Picture 1: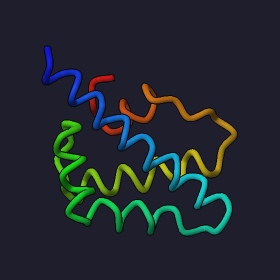
Picture 2: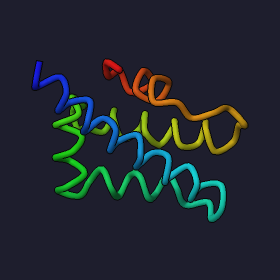
Picture 3: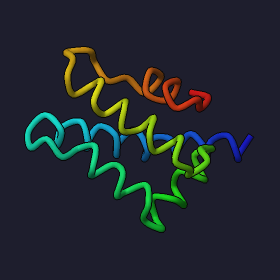
Picture 4: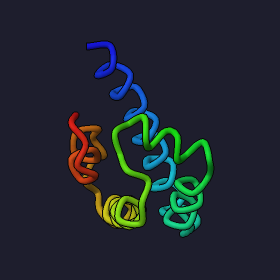
Length: 90
């Protein structure tokens, strides 16, 4: 039970990072680079792992795709949609 709460907390950090990257992609066009760099840092890797995501190239690719998808659309960012796009239980 406690482990699930911890995982959801760290998944929230991942969502926050993606939201920041989307804002950056919309304003400066560098959100995909920003999220990719974050996932390669030690803290980013640790957060992804604690959120239940494997910090591999597939996850990085999905995150870049999500940033581009949400940056180019008017679709609202939701925690559930983002996490389902990354295959994490919401």
